[in-house]
Length: 113
Image 1: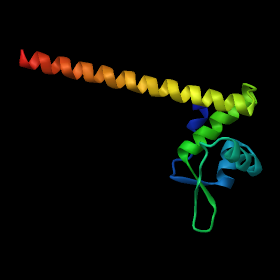
Image 2 (image 1 turned 90 degrees about the vertical axis):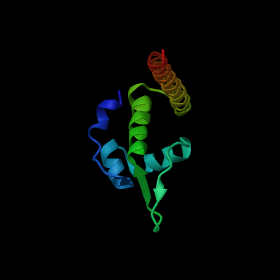
Image 3 (image 1 turned 120 degrees about the horizontal axis):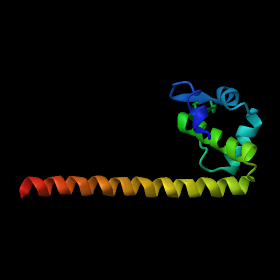
Image 4 (image 1 turned 135 degrees about the vertical axis):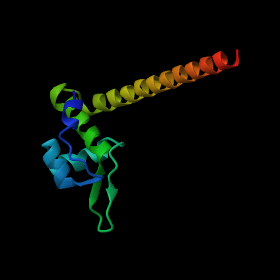
């Protein structure tokens, strides 16, 4: 999915809206609109007020573009899909953490016995 586009994002800390527009192949007005529709897109602002997007913002924009343009989600549906994906990623992270703790406890038990 959008993971295939991630490699094409230059390796830098911040991107101006024009750069994000080129990477995502979207007009800047669409990016500004999505910022109002998707609360997770929160670019920082330079002292002059210019939007500064982080890499994770750009990845999110590419994911949203995929949901809206390729998978034909509505904005509301895409928002819901993103929330579901976040919940499942959090659950996977917790499961991995618990598995690591279990392994660590087993090795401590083996050392003690």
